[in-house]
Structures are given as C-alpha cells and as structure tokens.
Image 1: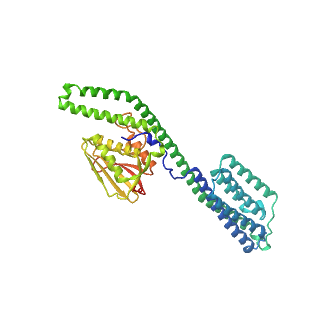
Image 2: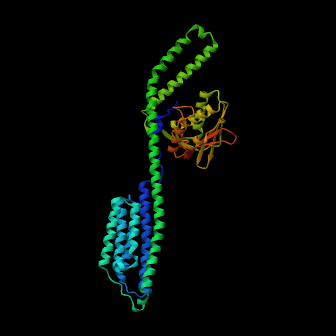
Image 3: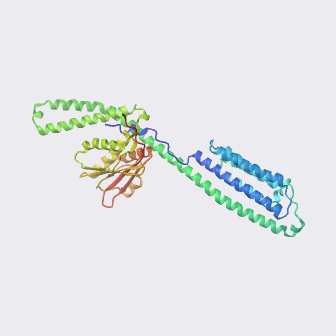
Length: 437
C-alpha cells in the first residue's frame, strides 16, 4: 500500500509564468523599444528642421545626444538578460530619457519648443511602473527641467522667410506632439498594463497554491495523527479476530469463517495504510517521484485497486504505450485510486478506465454512469470543496488536481452526453528510463 497524503507536499517542478521579475524585465524591454522610437524620432526631426526648414541647429551636440541614447539602449539590451531589473533601474532609465529630452530642448528653443510636453510621457509611464516615491522623483525632475528650460535655453534662429508662418508652424508642432504623446501612451501603456495584469494574476495564483498546499499539509498532519491513534484499536481488533478464529463454533461455520477472513484482510489493509502514512511522514521528498514505465505503472495500480472493490466491474482499456514513461510515484497512484473510488461510489455496476496517448501527453480517463457533476461542482473541480457526501469528503479531486499540476499536467472533468461523468488526468510523457542489464 502506498503513502497517500504526505507525499503530496513535495515541491513540484517550477511552473513557468509571468513572475514579478519577468514582468519587470518585460517592462524595461518596453522602455527600450520606446527609446528606439525616440532615437529615430529625434534624428528625423533634427534633420527635417535643419535641412528641410532651414532652421540652423547645433547638429554636433544634438546628434551626439541621439547617439548617446542609442548606446544606452544597446547597453540596456545587453544587461536585460543578465540580471534582475529593479524599481531604481526603471526610474533611472526614465530619468535618462528625461535628461536627454531636456538637453535636446535646451539646444532647440527650450520651453518655447512645442515638444516640451513630452516630459509628461515619462511621468505617466513612471506612474504606471514605479513605486510611489519614484514617481514623485520623476515629477520633481520634470518640473525642474521645465522651469530651467523656461529660464535658460538656446533660442532658435528662424530664417526671415519663415517669420510669417511662425504661428502656423508652432500650431503644427503642437499638433504633432499631441498625436505623438497620445499614440505612444496608448501603445505602451496597453502593453505595460497587460504585463502588470499578468504579474498580478501570477501572484494571485501563487497565493492560491500556497493556501491549497497549506490545506494539504494540514490534512497530512491530521492523517499522521489519526494513523498513530488508530494503531491501538486496529491491534485490538486483530487480536479479537484471532481469538474468534480459534472458537470451535466459528471454525465449523464456513459462512462465518469466510466473513472472518474478509474482516482480517480488511484489518491488515488498514494496518498497511496506517503504517505507510506514518512512514511517509519521514520520507525524503526527493524520493517521492521518479520516471517510470507508463504501462507497468498503470497496470500495477489497477491490479492493486481491483481487490478493494471486487463488487465493481472495471473495464480497463489502454492504448499502445510502448516507449512511454512519465513522472510518477505514490502520490500519482493515490490520485488515480481516488478517481476510481469516486467513480465506483457513483456507479456501483461498473466503471471504465481508458488510457490514451496524444503526442507527448498521456490521458488517463475514469468514466462512470452515475448522476454526474452539477454545474456548481464543475466550476470548482480541483478546488478544496465539500462533497455531497458531507463534511470530511470531497478532497479526492482536489488532491488529484494538485498532483497533476505538480507533474506539469492538469485535471479535467465533464459530464457525458449519454450520462455519467468523465474525469481525466492529463500528464506529460518523459524520456523512458534506461533498462537495467
């Protein structure tokens, strides 16, 4: 008999997802993309104003600033994959963009430049990405830059032929700036917000998993305590049954003797369960799961389950699993038994176990002809819940779902059109273990 509960508390394979670190890295990547847009935009604008409109600009320092932004982007892209992105680094990246913008505006008219409101883009992005104190740092920096550019800047020298169209040019620049800010905010805040929502969902999933594992640990501790307490009454029952077997009246009655043997077998089974629960409390977690041959594992699990429900017919159908292996152990075997037990209780006349292989996944389906699941039950399959059988029941599907998730798979449940329910463990296949010589 296998260890049913405590083996489930083993740490599973790390689940990939948008963790906070991954979300921060992705948000920094969005800022890098935005800076590339700024590099191209500044380059095009500088050349268009200087060469197209004939407005003399200090090309050397302005193009140098563009090159500096490009170099900073290359360094940022190199560092993204090598270390964890922090709040301070994102703030410094936004301050760098703000400083480069302030320098460009200083060389091209200061606060009179219609692109002065681009400072708001950095502030809005900071408000989405950063901690509160960092946002106020950006607000203060933007305020200082605006005030400094209003006081001190290099004025633009417009050619005489542009003087009559000065108001129209300023209005056009303001309109281009407005559209640019709106488009960039719409594009990048949408992406960043999606990353943040994914991160929040990831954290919510972690909290839910922690609560589920806490429930499993508490059930395991309760099972250990119960197993310890059950040892004495089971020993007493074993002694009493032994005394009954020696009684002449029982020994001469074949019917009572058969029932006595069945009772002794059930007591031995209970003792084995109690022993395995107590043993599992000290089992090293790294030994709980290993790569095994899928066909032999399922065959042995079914063979061990049949005697416990001799009155329930089990139709076992398994497709070709040659060369197939999966991560399995006592917890997976117990999860399969839980599903078979539930199906046997719902459909006493017979159940089906169908095993199929689909590419790199193994589907183990338990099918019954019982009343099926209610709509409310289907909505919470795999969650801790109370069964219709009453308090203390309903953990079988929860434990099975937890085992499947730890092995990189999932649990699925549905009602069949012809009646009954179907519950499936969908598990990933792995490389088959090497055979011993």
